[in-house]
Length: 307
Image (tube, rainbow, N blue to C red; front, side):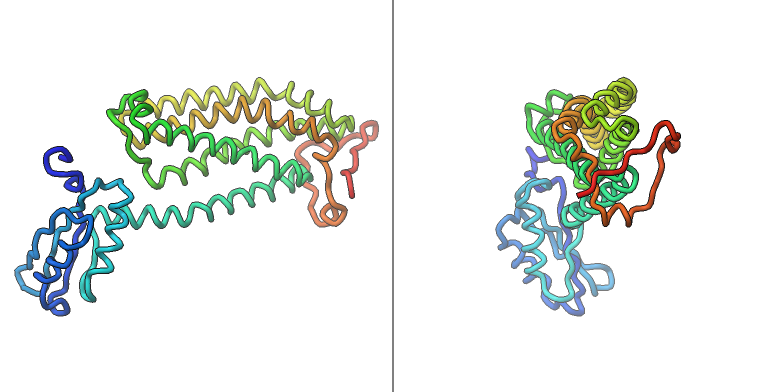
């Protein structure tokens, strides 16, 4: 369709005019044709009652181009009161704008809530903040891979697509929430074991080694299962499902190997006892949530490090 009729023929926008308020729809059509980025304007096409009309505006650019979204704004600015702009192009542009505006709210809420819950569970704000940062690193890597594969011709051909395109606007939001949850699951599993050893021995560096030794195989095995599941989604012919599957598979793979098995224990070993630093005022405020049986008399629980 793009080759024979122009890139804008795939999706058009509609201008619906109330003829009781828009007295000269032909002049409106002429005004829209003069806008930059408009290929053709069809109509006005009145209804049987003669009190409404529709004009079909075809952009000169492809639906996913940024110029097409900008054209929606120009068309809305050009139509008078009594006319509204709708259609697939306008709808997708509005959804993309709304999701782009709300994405940072979603990220901020999820990260803040995860830091709060980890601080309650582990009583270690440094570890909680570091865990959130590492999880964001996994998600960012997945976004980068999805962009490189699906928005470039070379990457798209690697997964069986004829050319690069765009990523569906709601995919980043869904990927972030799911991947952040999976990453936090692995993080809690690892850190809970490290904290248990720290409370029992007081050895900050050794507890990281022993905690990683105890949980590493389980975490990598669970991650391998999830990678296999997501690769199955990546083999689906639907582009959106393929995008989600590939992005999640890559993110889990990176998270369970580079992030969870290398970066997290390395940073914890480097900063040592600072991992378990807890301000005195916060220690008094936080409730005690035990993820393990309380130590016996022969194994007294270590107090948090106060400054």
